[in-house]
Length: 242
Ligand code: PXP
Image 1 (cartoon, rainbow, N blue to C red):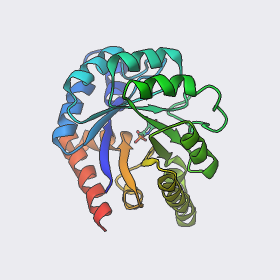
Image 2 (image 1 turned 45 degrees about the horizontal axis):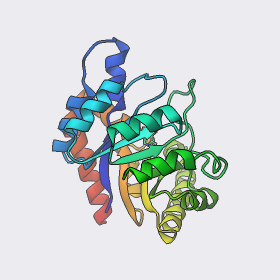
Image 3 (image 1 turned 90 degrees about the horizontal axis):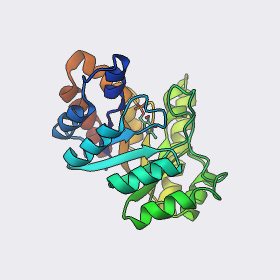
Image 4 (image 1 turned 90 degrees about the vertical axis):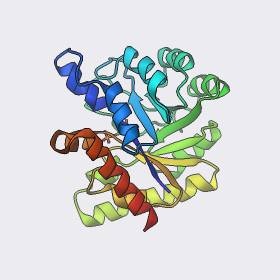
């Protein structure tokens, strides 16, 4: 049954907007775990636009569940991950100009470059996840590269404008979840999920974790962070049982 990992990047985004020390993503992580999150996800971007190195090190000390570090597949981040030792690293594509992660990692196209990042992390006991679009070629590449998990990119599903479009993208996610499982890969998903659209994804077969950030932080402005996390964790649990 799917569980919630809360992405606290956007708590740091608010802090960085004023270059000050609040709100604190580390405090948010503590609240999120108390409210039912099984893990905390952060993306330490190369441009440090939200999460800072200090946040990551403090999170390593306080997170009791899973700490999931989203990172670009580059030597700098490999070194940081090997030092900080999150339970899990998720490789994501990164472009400086993007507002948020755009599209999944091209695991198939970068098969030559990725082993140098994946190998040392896995040898250090860090579970390895690849954020990919829900396509058979990417699943096969993830398997070939020795990933433990794939995080299926739900952006196309989240951004679909019509019920038919949503249905088609949900079907692609379902096929990918089944395909990943058949290849022996664990299945995570995320990106752009909200209180209105997370349910059907949480109900997909073999789905273990959902990474959700922006919508929770947005809802927290009105109801508080603890309640926002709890509502999402409950929604996911209910959907998983249905
Ligand atoms: N998964 C990955 C790989 C991401 O890059 C992000 C955004 O940082 C998320 C999940 C969470 O997306 P959102 O903030 O839209 O919930």
